[in-house]
Image (cartoon, rainbow, N blue to C red; front, side):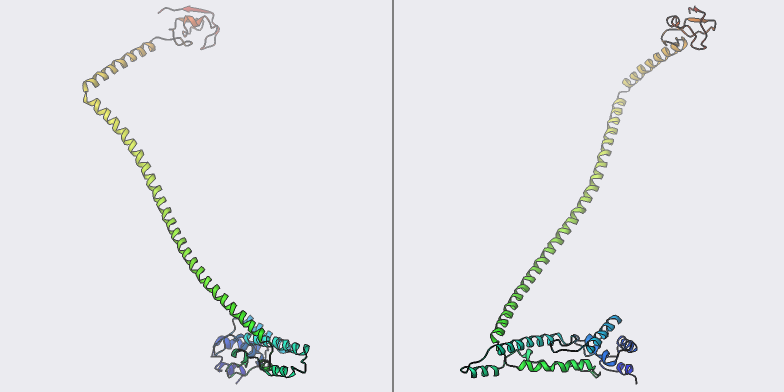
Length: 338
């Protein structure tokens, strides 16, 4: 049975098709089994599940495998533990290493006199009482049946050197108490800030509700304004119709008043007929009498010679030398009496 097939049946893999496919791809790319397992451990450092989770994508898997190779090939120093270790253990180890170095420098710079030599020895033998979660630094690997990589095993063995530093005697209890006091004050400030944050959050929610209400009222006002404009247009149209109806009503009232007195109406119409007849007669008389084409006021009474055109009155004939119709030179003018 190949390694890929064996990993597929492993309980920590959980039969996940995506993870099995990624393992096969990493194996085909030339990575060793230990490197693949170390990359899986690095990818699932913060996971609480007993089964390994697959990589997000192929690029992430390649990055993890490359990082594992770098850690495997690079020489590890006591000052810089591997990066893929747990962050909480790494923080504890750095804190312990700082106290160890400060204690060593203090012991090398100061010398005990013959009178307090016993007290110094007693202080060196006293152990610093760290909290329980600081003193327990044993790293427990994931409970899986998969073989761990050599690099990950070396990293776990490397951290065992720091476990003895936790039990070394320390002489900076005052510094530790000060840091504890500072931590308590910071926790109190954090609690106050959290409460202020909650109050501000509640205040913001109230303001948001007020803003929503104002938006709702504004939308209602906009709807009311639109309805008002429509009603105003209808009212203007109704006013125009009303004015038109009033004019028609006044005309009809005048017609009714006129029809109530038929004799007066008939008399007015007869007078109008007589006036029209007189105007017609005068117009006919004017049409029967030829008027002068120049002044259009006096009748024609001059005959031009030799063209014999009869178009002008005696007042206008003496002021012209040519006929206005044929443009012939007037040789003589004969006045005609009708």
